Image 1 (spheres, helix red, strand yellow):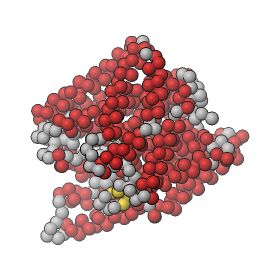
Image 2 (tube, helix red, strand yellow):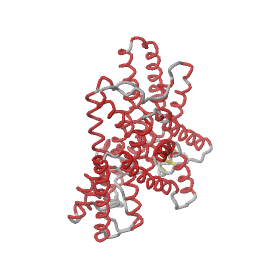
Image 3 (cartoon, one colour):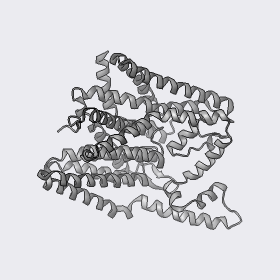
Image 4 (cartoon, helix red, strand yellow):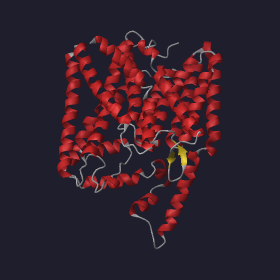
Amino acid sequence: MQSFIKKYSIFLMLYIIFQPVLDAITGTMMRFNINITFGVLIRMIVMAITVFYILLFLILNRDNKHGFRIIGYFVLLAVVSAINLAINYKTKTLFIPSLEITTLAKSLYYPIMLLGYFYAFEELAEDRIINRFFPKVVFIAVNIISIIMIVAHFTNTSFSSYSYYKLGESGWFFAANELSAIVSISFPIMVWYALKKINTWSKIYYWLTIIIAIYSALLIGTKGSLLAIVFGICMAILASVIQFFQDNRRRKYMAGIIAMLVVTLGGIFAAYPAMAVSRTAELHSDMIKYKKKQAKTKKGITKDQKKYVETNKTVSYLFSGRTVYFENAAHNFSKATPAQKAFGMGYATNFKSEKKAKLVEMDYVDIFFQFGFIGTIVYLAPLAYCLIYLIGAFLRKFKYMWSFKWSMLVSSVALGFGMALMTGHVIEAPSVSIYFVTILSYAMLNARIFLRSGEDPYTIDVEE
């Protein structure tokens, strides 16, 4: 059994590398109108095996108090989920079992994989096997995404990120928002790996992979990926400047790193006018002007369009109309039964036809409407615990937080929580949450060791 624990822990690490392949295959199948979502099927199988892995880990660990808490949480989550399904089956105007169950299964992916990866890291950290895999696996995964994006771009086989504008590209990946979230969350980890590997200037080729990743991310054309890349580079510059003053022996080297990062950031700003994301910003303004003009004609505009154009221009651009979906969902929730308000309205609140089922695409908001007051507290408890724990570790060990490892981990975790609000498709999208929970688990393991031992776990880092 212990052999299975070790081997499956290694599998979970290597599993990250195959994520872009799963997504590209799924995207190709969607292109040919094949409804079987290959990626979801594989991920659900892995999730089921991970449940067994967690139970086995808890049994072999023999920490009964900890084990009971973990099992108790998942039993509570299962009960809340069952109540949610039962209430909505009896209450919703249109209840589509396959849609509701699939959505719920995707929702359960994050808490199961979060715990699974935490135990995997804990297992692999004991004999430093972890250093051979993380963050290298994330680095490799993002490079695979970059290669697919570039090949799709130059072969003219990409999906359009914004089909109505014919702008932006998502390569062979079907969902541009999910791809944007993946790249955004993973980018700081990629930067960390590259900067640690460039211990001599003969290894500058590692930074070329970062340039390619930036180019690929900017092809997507979403504002989320642009803001995340700028944020990641800025955090790396800040960390480099602090290290420049902290370590007198490496000042010449750090000055070179700072110069490289500043040039990279300058290149992004210089390229901005040619990016698809700059064009979408212009089109957004043009569209609002057109809708306002149309509203004065006899034809007029719809209620949703009126809400959209009346929203603050910056807010409507940043949230891409999500405020309108929020108002509609909130209206449905206000009319919900007390049971639904407590345990949620399931997928997309109340809808009369599947075509009219619209998510707000802001994870915390969608989770609240899906699980209700009680369900949301239960569902988000692990994330809330991790966030509070990591903020505490950051504040208590603030002066140590400016190594490349800690600054990039903090950036990645912050982007994960932030993107969940701004663009959605993070917590409840298995293709994205796998990256988020991996990085979150790694940060939690490091913070836990740091706080308990009082020493930064330098042995858990990029392998030199």
